[in-house]
Amino acid sequence: MEILDPNNIYKRLVNILGDAWKEEITYIAKAAASQDQSETAALALRIILKESNLQKHWNHILDNERAHYLANILINQPGIGDRLIVDFLSGTGTVSKALRSYNRTVIEAENFNYYGRITPNNAWDLSDCRTPDFKGAVAVIITSLHHEVNPVCRLIQLRKAGIEHAIVIENLRTSEFTSKFHAWFDWFFNRVLNEFDNECPGWYWTTSQWKCVLQSFNQNVEWHQTFNSVPGIPFSYDLFTIR
Image (tube, rainbow, N blue to C red; front, side, top):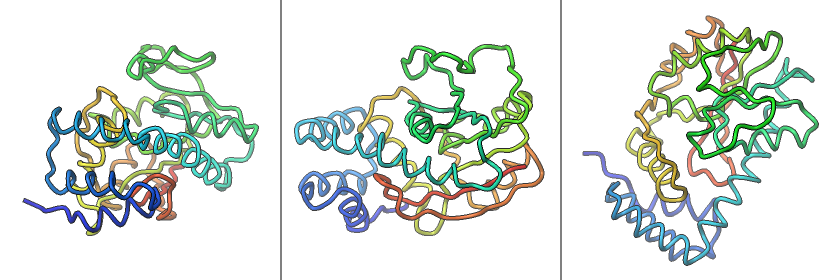
C-alpha cells in the first residue's frame, strides 16, 4: 500500500493556506497519511474545519481566487477571442461567474440537480436528452472529467452540440501526485471541505493517457502547460487544447 507523506502534505497545505492554520493543517496531514475515507473520519475533519473557520476561508479561496486565476488563463488562450464559452460540467459555477466578470458570454452545462442548484437561465441541463446547437462556441472543461463514470461519453455529448474547440484543465498522475494522493484529496474536497454526494471513479491518468481519452472528441489534442500555483490547490493542473 502506498504511504502518503504527512510532512509533504503539511508543507503543501501551509504553502496555499498560510501559517495561521498550522494546527488544523497538521491534523489534515495526519488524516491523509492514514487514508481513512470513512464517514466518521469525514465528520471529525469537518468539525475541525468548521470550528476553526478554515472551511469558510478555504472555500472562499477556491470560489474566488482559484476561479479568477483559471478564468484569466482561459480568456488568454489562442482562438478563444470573444466567442461564446460553454462551461461544460460547470459544477457550482464559480469559473463561469469569473469568466462573466471579464465580460464574456458563458453558457453553463451541468446536471444542476446534482449540486442542488436551480438551473440558471440560458443554461444547458445535461439531464435533458435534447442536444442544443453551439456551433462556433468554445468549450472549457475544468477538472471535472475525472469525476465522470464515462468521460468519453461526455466528450461525445459535447461534440454532438456542434463544438469543435475545447480547452481542458485536468489533474495528472505523476510520480509526485500519485493516484492515492489524488484519491484522498478528491474525497477531502468533496466529502469534507464540502458535502457533495458524488463518488470519484478514480481516473487519475498520465499526460499520454489523457491525450488518448481526449481524442474521442477530436484527434488533434495538444498538451500546453502545467500550472503549479493554483490558489487553494495542493497539486498542479495541466492544460490541453482540442481542435
